[in-house]
Image 1 (cartoon, rainbow, N blue to C red):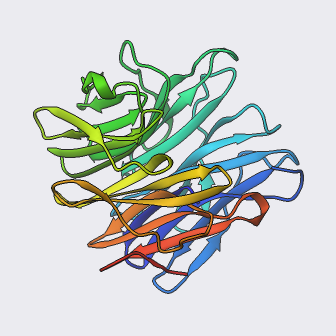
Image 2: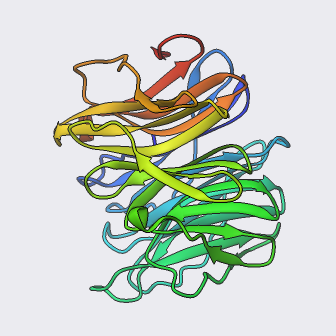
Length: 331
């Protein structure tokens, strides 16, 4: 499972992919729903149903009005990927094909739904097989997806989105960008942290924004207080750690999830907590098991995290629920 988003305590969506069994490593989309009592699989379409196709969903976003969007990528041959987007119409998932500007690949990594006619998605595209990618920003206006220009000197990839409203949206990846209602601009973050890959954005308010990622050696964070940026490193854990998502409950209660590992075949879930003064690690509720967390959402003071336990054909979805005290496994 790669993404999760909550409408209410009994209406939560999670998305990812599952091996199809047709051909080795071929996969189909996977969407699951929490109704307040249990998680269940909801049928979802694929970008391609070819035997060798790979279909991945990386993010899901919901609005208070009940709109649900999921995005990712698919490949008919398992090599060349194109963007994938779908919308829940209240009864079933419906594909909504986005543009694909890259001849050698296109992917959507995150989505932020503000309203039924205002949805943003970000990722990257490749115009040359042997060169770095380019940032991809798309907007849904209620009837179609349109590509939105990226700022001059923008770099390779966007991985995360956070929307406060139609005129205040943040995106992060190889750079941090901001939308002011008319255009995207590059945020002038501290030079010491300008080389990282930022996977996560969280905010208690528009003037208390956190961006987390990895600079190739350590997990790093950026903080925007409404006036200036600051940065630092989170506690060191083995190889990494690698934060993948974050959520802010208040200015002194920010959580981040991800993974770290000494051995790539023995990953451990990452749980980080900002207490208003420093980032600290929280105990792993499944010690000794191969786990990683990919996404985080909140309803009130309750947090839900999703990820994967195990590897490849032996892997299974992982759901964690945090209410009070330590995180606990919620099956």
